Length: 155
Image (cartoon, rainbow, N blue to C red; front, top):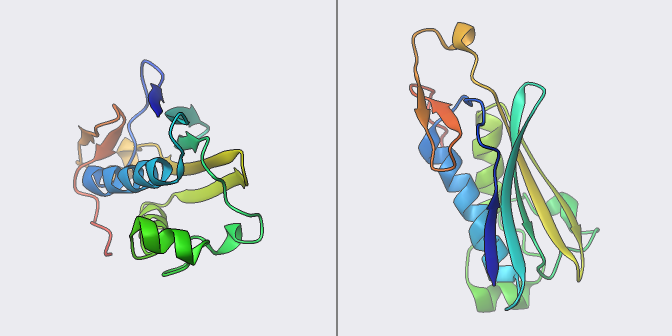
């Protein structure tokens, strides 16, 4: 399996709780690893667009049927119950990721095709010093920044 990063030299600061944002990206990467066959490819990328930073986890995994895509962010929803049972997990990861991202004022969505792979996108608002008051941005693992002092998202 090939795991790579495609990040610009600099990304703007983002508003949020760095630990929670890392949790979301870790969940997406764990899922990509779990559902990508040996020899497959996974890429974590990021870009600044308008007033947000968009992180994308792309894989060449098994893909998600179009009919299931609207429901994958629901609690306990499993696309393939038999395969999910073998791989483990509770069916809560994407629901928690959605909750955390929405608590940060962002969005999460998927593009996927069975047999081709999936792209999970997460957008987070850029840090706005005027709205943040005295809070200072702190670094996340990806090189993006999150503002310290944002209310933690409840999970």
